Length: 141
Image 1 (tube, rainbow, N blue to C red):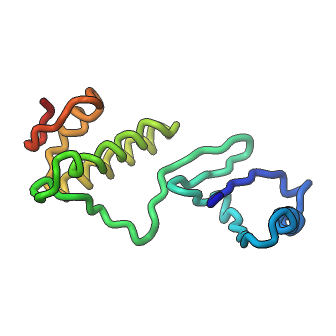
Image 2: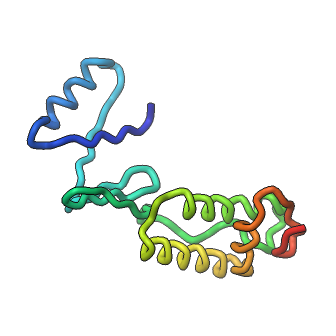
Image 3: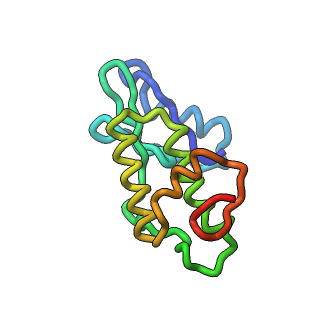
């Protein structure tokens, strides 16, 4: 197990006791605790925000994030060129983002495509057909 997210009531459970319980299960493993800051925590590729009675999520990118993907004019196989686009598209549509956060993420994806010389209309092709093959010219066959 690599990453573990535990949501608990801090008025009922002491963090140090919880950490001690995990350590006693398998003393050979090293556990670290990262606590939320100002009502949110980054976990994997998400930022989880805690509101009064609910949670909301946003896409998280590390501070070292660059918008580099394989450029369209590279000599890589076409399937490799479009793998990152499929990933970004699937992530956008897999998470239950608010309308505003979905729009923000969609704009970021379009910027990534533009900065790597893709035609941004390729997103429509990705969303309309997952099984088709790319012809190498920003279109599906």
